[in-house]
Length: 96
Image (cartoon, rainbow, N blue to C red; front, top):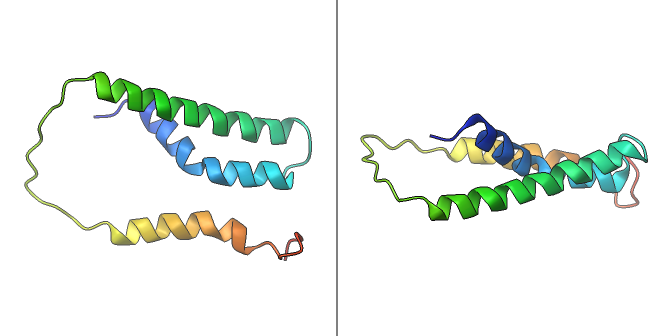
């Protein structure tokens, strides 16, 4: 199982494209809010890279699956949640 830190890094990295969009748009204003978005996104990418490197160095463990559930709806929910901020912007760069 993943540790709490690993889960937090993976969760933050899944939101990093949204944080970058917020930074590019100065969503919370210029200055430290924009810098915070970029720093958190970059730190999550570095953490994901470190977790990947660490995972490759561990010995593999085998798991027997007794039941498999489809998670199609959760994937669609994730995609829609990440696309909504992009859909709220006019091509001219103004909010609706």
